[in-house]
Image 1 (cartoon, helix red, strand yellow):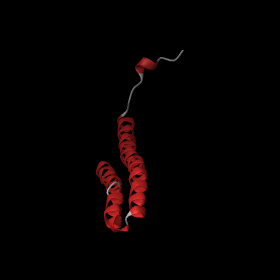
Image 2: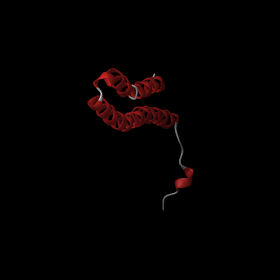
Image 3: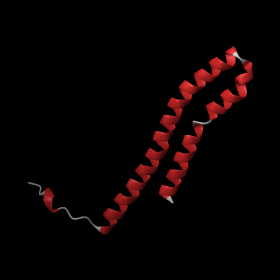
Image 4: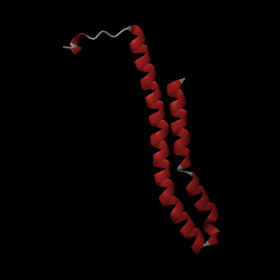
Length: 85
């Protein structure tokens, strides 16, 4: 019979757990922002291409609106670097 109620955590185990949690948080910061950016880019990109096909004068504005969601990933990357270092 195994007694799980008397487990002892050493200092090395706690430090390793903290490093793992930091790595997991950094990965989630980049991953979730990447998924959100892709989702936003899909709907904005298709609308921008449609608007550009109808009126070529809105190409600059459509390109600008398409680039804006990509900044979310940069923010996620900065947050993950701040978490890690």
